[in-house]
Length: 409
Image 1 (cartoon, helix red, strand yellow):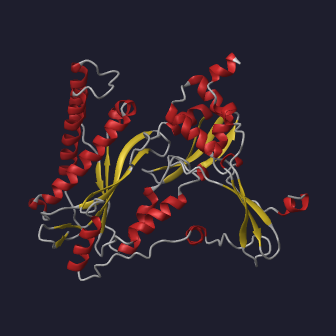
Image 2 (spheres, helix red, strand yellow):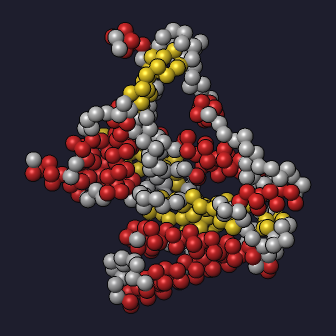
Image 3 (cartoon, one colour):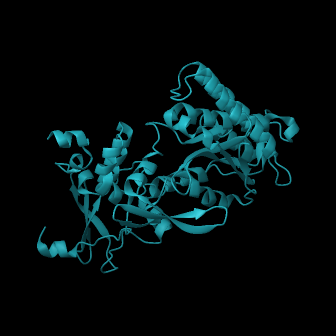
């Protein structure tokens, strides 16, 4: 490519600061204080590689004025702040075909912070228990005729592990259509914008979670570092039973067309987005957060090493599913059940299959920008003219190589 061509390459504006910038500059200091576990190494490697020559890409050229730009490939890691928009839009588009003409409820189940250290030492087991306890609670309440429904509930559950300041805060967001599917294929809707009694749900959720946790502990499948003594585990359980576990139900969303727009805020979130990072100076990171009690936007300033530690705190086990479907929305029976419910409600039973959108269409929806339009002449279309191979030599090991090997070298 000639010098003139280089001058014609259009660049895309980036946020002032990114999580990757903090990792690139301070991951070495982090490794001097903490071990970089394999799952953390993969996250760091991917975020540092994202949209760089390391992952390859392509060159686009305007078919009108000849302007060129380079687009590098994304890492697609689910912990990456830059890679969630497209997966979220694809997921939401797929869910559009499954919407029902009923009210929807947003239900949140939160674990006490007393469990944080146990969960962090046993993530896969404990988080699976959280999903199981929540699903059993909701399905049981839906099935119980005393709760005015008496059928099979359906819902989507999404795991979040953080609070606004990146501390551990384990909770599930559940999106629940307002009603149940009866065994005869009929649909019974909720009445008067009421789902279930949250105090009763809290007690049942607590009981189911602690029962499942106790069974896991007795199987010795958990690494309770500080609860090897049965008496210590018993004291933990007693303490947890004495607390009121937080269960919250938002007012129902009455118009289905707003459901996905509302729930899209929760589906593919990461612990922190790049736009929340205000500054990176002298080894300190300042980022914005919202005080939920006062609804004020405040700032938090911590060391870069502490920031990385908090960010990696929210890594999920490899292969762990953080979005799950239950009840009549479980993946195996979902399409058939939705057809039954729609037919009963007098709607078209056929699912809308025309929900696939191109990347260009999704980007236009997200940003209002036609990414195929030339940013210079505003007339031509950007066409791919060449592929860029992945980097033949990575500088990343020099950034995140174990510090003990650096010293040995």
